Image 1 (spheres, helix red, strand yellow):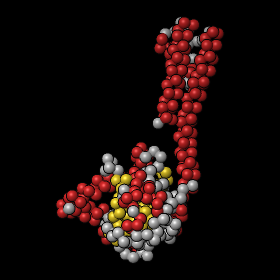
Image 2 (image 1 turned 180 degrees about the vertical axis):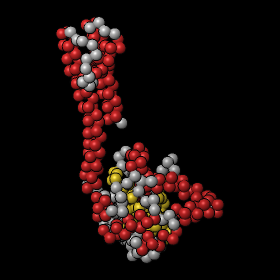
Image 3 (image 1 turned 60 degrees about the vertical axis):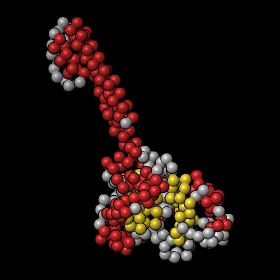
Image 4 (image 1 turned 90 degrees about the vertical axis):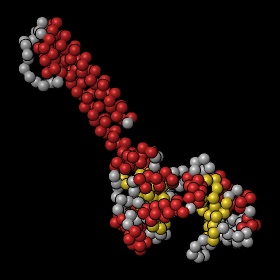
Length: 338
């Protein structure tokens, strides 16, 4: 927008210069050659624009000198106008080049970030959730989606291109990323992204969106660690609203309320953490941080979680603790668990 405003301002000055030049030429011919308004204006226009038509009326010596003055003024005006157009084209192209170069340099420095494939409604919402929490890169090929995304998230790192291409995933830093989410417009594209990402990075966590329930198993086989189906999730939620309205209301408040600012978070116990080897009662997590311990997942990859763990539950390095609380409380727990 700044470039366009600058172009319009320069265009107004150029137009004003042309108007003044035509006014001076018309008045000059009327006075020096004694011609009518229409003939004087026509002679001025063909002179200023360097059209090269023959003289409309015979010129005196002073009239010819005046015509040369107008011709030089017209060439100057055309030079300003073409320079203005060239400047607009160069600035627009240079802006895109510099933006992409800056984005690529920032992406190269990223580590443990998340790659989001697709900037549709789901991708934009996901980006808003990630904003301020974890660095992320968005891959999108639709210019309209990119423009809409930058309108709401002007500092988002966006790569324009097809996420199903391997080289674009590598440019997004797939080998250093901790996760990839593919929410493209078709299940086929999401399937291709899963196959490519799993082949390029065996350890990255892949989350895929499935539009058709029949595609979920194929996405798992293609390498996805988690598959989310909006149809299934929506059905479960609608049933929960009918059967367990209070529980759903609590979850909405706990995960979405800006007033309470509660977050559900997972924290991994580090090998040097002071709570490693202690029981939940000895760790005093609620007393020290004010957090609610909801569940615990042991490091030995046993299926499922230990919900509402009892006080004598042992905490070992590598275990994952699921807690509910405010962001500052979670930050305090992360310090304890490190």
